[in-house]
Length: 287
Image 1 (cartoon, rainbow, N blue to C red):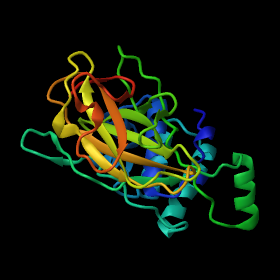
Image 2 (spheres, one colour):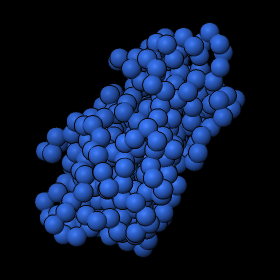
Image 3 (cartoon, rainbow, N blue to C red):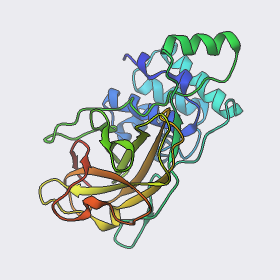
């Protein structure tokens, strides 16, 4: 399996590490159940690892990568990255938005405001970044791994791993561009929207990002799935993500919808029936 584009040496947080491991799982085409059997590791251990809730042990990473089809040589950079994260070099970044959300009696997510994850972008070419990092023995600036699992999901087929809209959609009223993504994770639908400033000077004041789930066929919007994140970007060199997980009431085809506007209004302008927001690919979700 070719994983050379995932660049583990650029990972600086446990959450980014988990995101990249999910991309490897997706490329291997293995379910969590299959991985647990192949790697001889419990599903709960793998789930915690892939959700970024816990730094996995060296053995767990080794058997996971082996089960996904990586050679010993291919696995070595990932093991080094795991050791680097364990040692605290570089320090971990901000905590992510909740991966699962709080669950009510019906199993639906209970929404609320969370601070987004901030992922800095280094505009230099990748080869130059790595050369400087190695030569100077400095902490590399994370290019982020928000694009490593952008699978083009067909509306008629299940998606494994994260599937993202191709390219960023400008939201002029907020001074940002957004890219919504969707994936199935542990019996829930995980929604992400990646946000970056459109201008070098960043955003003008506070911006609220919104993410929610919509049924493709009925166009139903689930109010409990609506999640907001306050965003304030000082320049256009960083990407933040607003993430939330929700359990739909029925199986079906769903997509993440996203939007943004200035201020702190609890509802996006697109919440009225005739608007749908910026959409991700469609996920065929089966509980």
